[in-house]
Image 1 (spheres, rainbow, N blue to C red):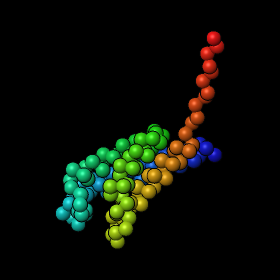
Image 2 (cartoon, one colour):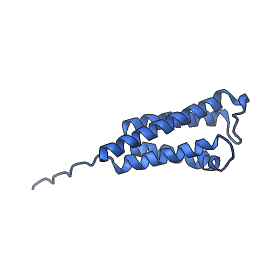
Image 3 (cartoon, rainbow, N blue to C red):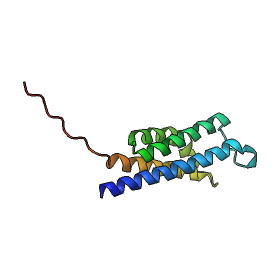
Length: 121
């Protein structure tokens, strides 16, 4: 059961991270096509694209701490404000929430280390 939940967390994180990377890349490369976001610049879009790619890689590798940090770096500056807009870009916020859920699944199902035996004096 733990392995299944861990695999679901990895897949969810990879899917959300890849989708976020595509959205941020399209915002970065095609700003004139109606995808321009208020309050973000090309540098910000590039930064969030890199964050999403790192989150995808970390999800596939199962690094819960990295996914949590990238979720926090992506959700609170932009994702939380995007959820409330009435536009298809609200999917950015919901994909960030999915990445947060994936990080929770990865954290809860991470492999536990074996206790270290104390040295006998």
